[in-house]
Length: 279
Length: 174
Image 1 (cartoon, helix red, strand yellow):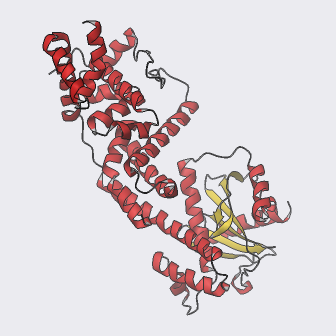
Image 2 (cartoon, one colour):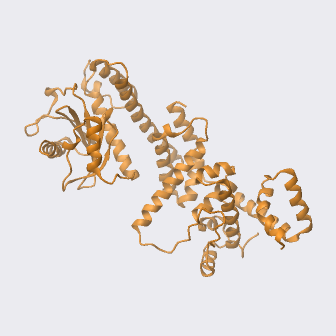
Image 3 (cartoon, rainbow over the protein chains, first blue to last red):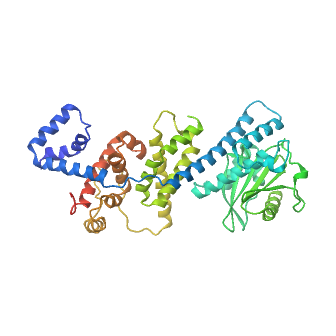
């Protein structure tokens, strides 16, 4: 092998792939005609090409993966569209809340399998439909993010303080966690279809529990819909395996979600409510 | 691209994405997880995708970054074991992949099988060869996925193929 050969080896790769211009390719051919080493090298590389393409498995996605991915993407897409819809309403013409609720209810009927209105046998759209659906979607998103193990900010209390300044959301009075519920993540973006925050806790049993907080001075939680828990009356509902407690506290709307039944949710609610009332 | 279009188009890339994930992770369950995570992450960050640019390359880059991130975490949690050296991104990096003793051991494991030989390569070399030589991507696309210049990709393919031939030496060509 000569210096020319060493020089040529890298270009031989481009030659093999047909990526040299005509003059360069001609120079390579001229060298090959006189050099058995480089000719053998080219043959060995072509053989490797043949084996790489012919002897490696051509996997395709298993059918059940396709099904699972379609389903997950559709779920993500629904949650995204709901969030975007919430933002569009906030950013557009100021409409009365009832109109917003009407639009949201129509959207929910169209896109979710949980037909909350029909289930309740009501003729009028339910003003709680939007926050409850958004609470469930925020919860599912947080669970997914926890499964994905997205990076955590270093200092959660700092994130919370910044958030309070930016959005006037009273997150400094949010439940800071205790031995049963550890605060593991703060997502300072959207909650309940508005700018807000989702605080993610990990329960002692390993469940993900979320507390979503938004500033919503105009929003009223109908008292008659509440369930007495201690001296409070949160609205507690269950969708599939996840229960949500919804309540108003000052100017903020809170939604607490966990994969437990309604009575266990009442217990968690009381702990978090007392924790937020007595910072 | 409207959201359903985006979902459809990314779903249409599931086969090559799964294949890539198989090469990266080396197992079916891990490849399934990686492919799913990648599509969900892509959907969430779709605003960052510029319409008209290469969706496939963008998706694969997400997949690879996700894989590297997971691997990094796993390694932090494990007691470090023997591992092939990571290449530097410098095209002229002369670090050999395997020492003499290591080479004999790996050759014994590879037993002339090209897939095993590929799996034994350090990930940046394996990925470059899989994409450029098996999947038939352009240098530009591979460079976009790996986040390195084209020259570095070419150098990795060139050196990775050298290492492959060394690993297969006593068995190939058939």
